[in-house]
Length: 325
Ligand code: PBG
Image (cartoon, rainbow, N blue to C red; front, side):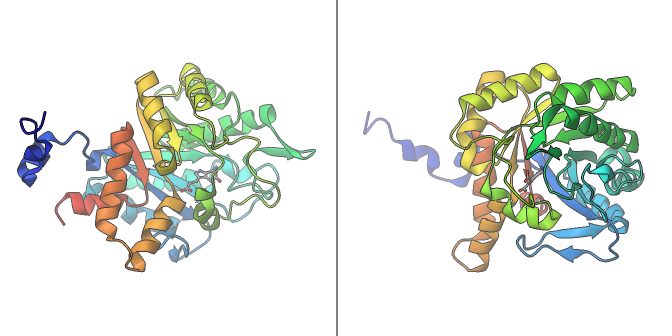
């Protein structure tokens, strides 16, 4: 007890603080999300996400090399097709935008970068829902086949890992068996296991033009009030064959990350989503907060909560800062 115990002794210098620090973000934890848009020639700025762009296909080789040079281990690709239809057919077209994007990146950097693909239909359907829409609802089981086809087409294009974000029941199992049948048993699955119906996805939906044209996603994404349910979702995905499980969003759901990591001791990812990024950027632009300190605190908090992997639009900046830049 005081005065024998003095907590401040360990905080006296940066050398001591760093010696006893429990959670620390490293570049090796980060995955950078990239938007690729079909049919554009130049990159387009995303208004609600300052510093982020929709890239043309031909910009991807340079992007891949830049990430490798920064020491960022992985990228997650989101595609914006030139044409959308009711069944999201461009999601599983062999020469679809993401399939070609994967091939471009792999041709440039090969094994030096993990190329992960988001598997979902919402960017490809005319109605903007994450599955087949009929009679006022999103049909679960018929959607599974399309998701599995999408995942296999990504793997065949060279993706190291597929990341289903649709929240249909049974999709991890359906994707795992389809991959195995197609001879892609080496392809990993990172499932968006506990994905909440969140307002924090707003800027992303603008970036990917993927907002539902009617209704919302509450019939398949999780209710923000629940965390026991998150554990049940994660358990099912692990049983169905997920290699990595993800919690999304990250910041408002740190307790969920903590519970998931502690309960299952499985590789756990957290998605520091578009709205979380936009908030930080807006506060920094207005001069209300120091961007660099804010970002490093946010990422450290996500790591401390239990995430092994952080998907974040701040990845490039953070990698530079972690290098002492
Ligand atoms: C696709 C998907 C979304 C995000 C990742 N994959 C949007 C959504 O579910 O509406 C959000 C990512 C972000 O906000 O940064 N289903």
